[in-house]
Image (cartoon, rainbow, N blue to C red; front, side, top):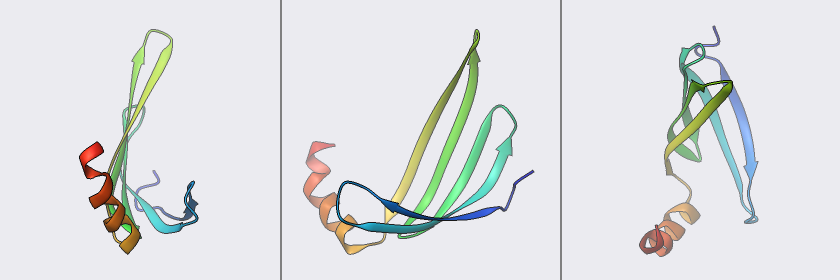
Length: 83
């Protein structure tokens, strides 16, 4: 089923900054939803939802996290007025 499965990630974006985090599958409804818990340099969860529209599969990802690294907190204060 994959529940409880943990995967470690090392993510790099356009900033010269590495993000280390672990994703754990905490809910899985086949063909409908996958929910994961994120821990590490940020904490929170991500939810994939799937729906059928004719012959097309629509996938949506919602990412709700809090950054734990100082740079996340600093930039969130600066960019908050823009979002």
